[in-house]
Image (cartoon, rainbow, N blue to C red; front, side, top):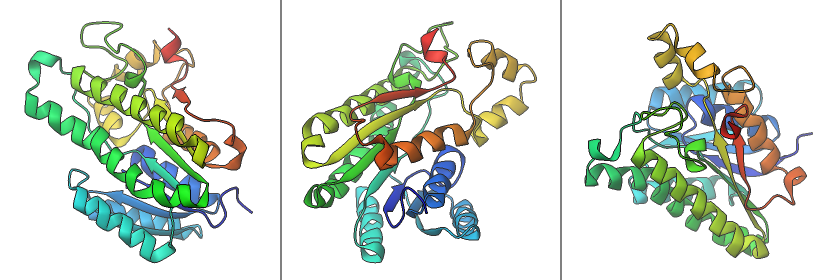
Length: 261
């Protein structure tokens, strides 16, 4: 018997990396999981993986810049399962640590649309029926870039993103905390997870092209290793469960202690 038996969870950006691990962790706790991504083949592979261990999952590929596509996905989930108990947002884009002078106004708008506004659209879709039932969980996967000045350690920064990415993650953290302040009274429990350096396919590609890359990253992490997607997934499953029922508006770094140095 899982902690999330019969609950319906949406996990965005979940056809690989952290999002896939989160979707699998929720499914193993008994949740019915709806996943998203932009690559149909990877989405199909992730659906097959979840179903292989007895999990129940559906999915849709779309671009989160398209609000109508987000609404179509939500409507698919509601048609299939009738409600959403848990929303986990893990989609997003990275700016390769570029500074403000290397970015355009259009870049800024794109990052805000994907990393923040799409989350706003999703939250406004799921919250009314959460409030109606008096219970729901929202978990945003942000970054330690949303907690601190990621330029620490050098002008290009080794802890996170550049100007635009960092701005979007600070905005995301502020938005989710505002949801907690406004809607916790009505049963919506909203929190933020801020991963540090985690070995995702993107990071693995970077490590493969830089023999000293792992050591360079690890030497600023007190835990002495990079994170794994399961490190984030385990925290996600906890926050989604009633075990975390008194945790509201928290911004939780899962970074091996990196944000403390």
